Image (cartoon, rainbow, N blue to C red; front, side, top):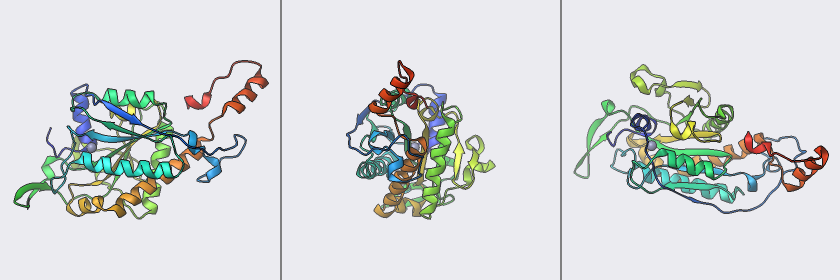
Length: 299
Ligand SMILES: [Zn+2]
């Protein structure tokens, strides 16, 4: 596969080649805020979301040794992904989502997406968000010179895109978060790219499941279908597009996207409702005179 093959396209190739594993490292910390289980869900309100108890995994797409796409100016997609995911984690932590996890892979490419998924599943997270930056199929590439080096670019498409898998065990919740994220990006005047609906994309053509929020289905993606929690992949922008590459490098754009993710996570957490703490579990146990199963974890 060529370096210019990006995100979902690249991953589709990988899926065909079977297992790819990227050794992962997880980091997290903790804090506090609590919602009363009896409260009615209040979208986006602080009290409706147990931020301290809600764990989101931010998956940094690709790795230092298998970096994904190459931008119009020769920069590695992995570096864009790491920068944006790190900033997003910082914003989540600052907002009280103290269990936010940054999932960083360090190995060579062929060390399995399955391992990445396994680490996410072991983390017990309530939400998985994979962060990528987009490119185009090779047939769209044009050539230009950057500091004496010939590079590929395509200004044909611009904008972000959001993907979910119908094979995820919680497709409904995955789609719900994807829509919230799309709406938050839109609220910040960021437009999604509609080009995945075009026939010219061939086997990379996707079903647009929400034309307002810019959410597509990509059922075969391993990180979306094998994760045992709601899972979404964000292509934050096209780095093969010369103008958008510059925008994606700017702290302003990165801040907008990180803020959109943080707000969407908060809304999603509020929608899901509070996680029963020990006291409420004990109360339920008393009422039912026996053992308690935390159904909240199974949603
Ligand atoms: Zn990617």
